[in-house]
Structure formats: C-alpha cells, structure tokens
Image 1 (spheres, helix red, strand yellow):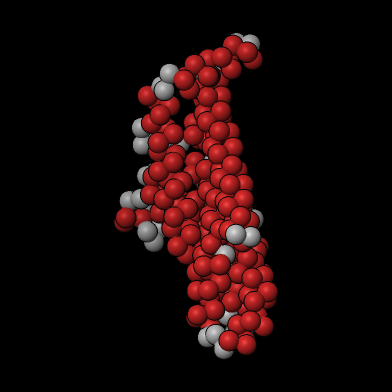
Image 2 (cartoon, helix red, strand yellow; image 1 turned 90 degrees about the vertical axis):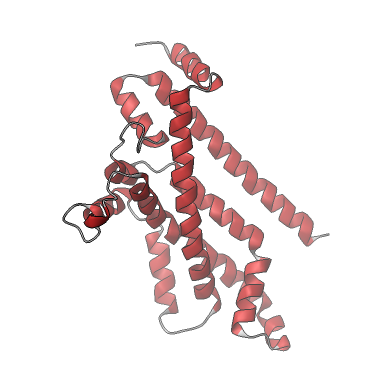
Length: 235
C-alpha cells in the first residue's frame, strides 16, 4: 500500500489535473444534489411556512412528525424507494430504478423534512415576534405568511444550504436505488466507497477533498449570508 503522503499527493494531482472521470462524477453529483434540493425546497418551504404561521387542529402533531422525520435513516429511505420503483412495485412501469432520477427521489425524501422543519421553526419564531404588530395592523393570514417569508429570506436560504449539505454527503440511499453504475449513476460518495474497497485510494481521497471543499464553500456561503442579513438589519 502507498504511504499516506503518496496517496495524498496523487489525490491532489488528480484534482489539479481536472481528471475527466473525476469531473464526470462531480458533475453528476452536483446535478443530482441540486435537483433534489430544488424540489425539496419547493415542497418543504411552503409546508414549513404554513405550519409555522397558521393555527389549525393537528398543527402540533405535524410539527412533531416533521421534527422526527429529520432523522430518517437513509438506508430505510433507499429501501422504500427501491421497493416502490422495482419491477413489482407500484412505480415499476416507469423504469426509474438505477437511474439518476431514482437518486434524486431518494435525496428529496431525505431533505424535504429537514427543510420543512427548519422553515417552520424560523417562521414561527418570526411570527411570534411580529404578532402584536400584525394584530394592530389587521394583517390577514396569507399576507402575514408572505411577509414572514420575505423577512426570513436570508434564514431560509441558510435552510436550503443546510439541505444541500445533507444531500451532497448522502451515500446509503443513493447506493441502493442508483446502483453505482459507471458513467450512469456513479456519484462522489458511492465512488469513494467503491474505490476504497478496490484499493484505489488516490481517486477516493481526491473525491473526499472535493467534498470537503464543497462543505467549506457551503459554510462560507452561510456565514456570508448571515453577515449580509445583519448589515441589512442595521442599515
């Protein structure tokens, strides 16, 4: 086995050389993750905002369910999606199993409760803060909802970035429904698992370096957004 420094040097050589296989895997990973987070936000943001703003029977139960689903085991999600998309499953005729679409569905199911639960908390806290002002102005329920969403836009962008961070690091569910097929469904996390088992540590570590860089970039974005929100609040 190569030494640690030898593997690390080889990994950085692959990154700086923009290795075509590496770029293909990164490109598919970003495509799958960004698509899944987009649809998760389309569902989770309005759902969380509605639960955080409106008062209706069963609201507390929905909040508890959303919080509980934040900890969904990825392998269970992968198994359920696999059963739904398999030839004998209800969605089998669509032939989506072992395609990027199946991976998007799995990631979306994992990320949507996270986006919805965090959005509910953000909007509910803001609604409590503005409650007297809304009441004095006689603001209606839907106007209150849109006002809260606009005022919480920076925090909600942070919520979306949190969902992205969760999705891009996912491996269990996407491996089950994607199958890790070369040039078809191979993404960064599944490739790291495969190449490590094959002893191709340079490629696995190179992908690990890329994942770390993405994590740093996401955190930098979160900090920049928060700083921008603070400056806007005191401008």
